[in-house]
Amino acid sequence: MLIAGNWKMYKGPAETAEFCLGLREQELTGVDLVVCPPFVSLAVAVQLLAGTEIAVAAQNVHWDAEGAYTGEVSAEMLRELGVYGAIVGHSERRQYFGETDDTVARRVHAALEAGLFVIACIGETEAERGQGATEDVLRRQLAVLEPDDNLVLAYEPVWAIGTGKTATPGTAQESHAFVKSLLDAPVLYGGSVKPDNAAELLAQPDVDGALVGGASLELESFTAICRAASHS
Figure 1 (tube, rainbow, N blue to C red):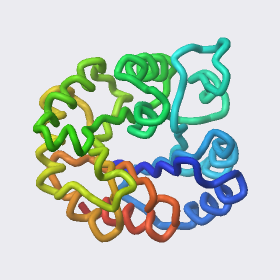
Figure 2 (cartoon, one colour):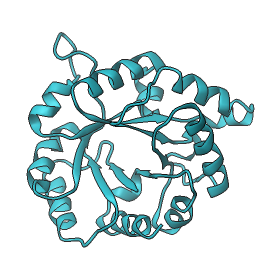
Figure 3 (tube, rainbow, N blue to C red):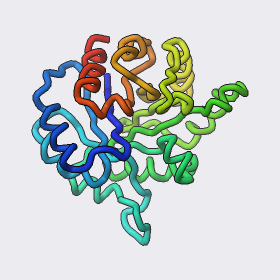
């Protein structure tokens, strides 16, 4: 069971240090943990979580090793920093920054080639679900990806991200089973995962963990989700 905390554009180095020191003190067994700070906070997270089983991942990664790509960071740079992996294709990247299935595929391929672990995000919008297009959207997003030992998928219904809405455990299970029928990889659930709904979501047979957003920013709520995962 894998629990990844996506901090988005929160926590500079000082807050990251405080969180990581607190996380080190927790007794969390039976679950794999990943924290995903902003780029400026990766180094301190790597330093303070060294010697633990807690991995550090970036929130994005570019497809080229170097070049004239202002504002981007390569897999090689992340590896040099000691970063373990990267999120790729989060719905916010698709919605606000022009990410496409093609660029997601290029980023995923480059990261895997460089030896990074990748959490590749997929999921439908509320409009697409309302039109009955969920499976078509997932099929399209998955068509550009190939199985890899270091690839994990995160199913995140876009309508459930930061909205407080959550897919029912049954809906999550149905979508996860469909995703696994198309691509052989572990699938995390992402979309308003909280301590009070984590256990039921993580108990579903095809839910292999969670990509946690807002609830990963507070140590108490994040560790509560991790404990729920360790018992599922």
